[in-house]
Length: 149
Ligand SMILES: [Zn+2]
Image (tube, rainbow, N blue to C red; front, side, top):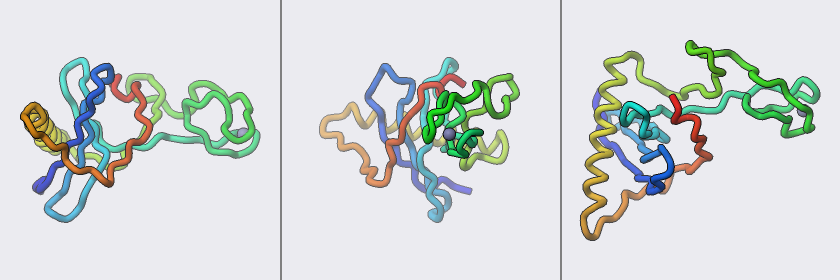
């Protein structure tokens, strides 16, 4: 499998650990969006697109993110630490939507995406830099704790 296109959208807020969004194209066939390039404690890493895990309010059945403390629909107080724990004993709040199947694949994708990010960063320092068009990018709510992995 080849990543035939990688698009990088740099994020300029240095206070944030999120450095860029990326989209990748696999074999000129399938696009995966909303990868994130994050400055972690051990350097840059790539977070695959993920969704927030939800559960249902015991009082009204409304859907709430696992971190919500009150039901969005009825306002009932919700239990803390709902859902399953991860291997480090912390609540699992997100699930990957797509992800590499093994470590080699992860290294390959991450290496290519970070290379593209650094290239884009260099380009951005040149005069007349025009950011890559990213019409289809969702600037979804970004949760800082995602970067704490
Ligand atoms: Zn409720």
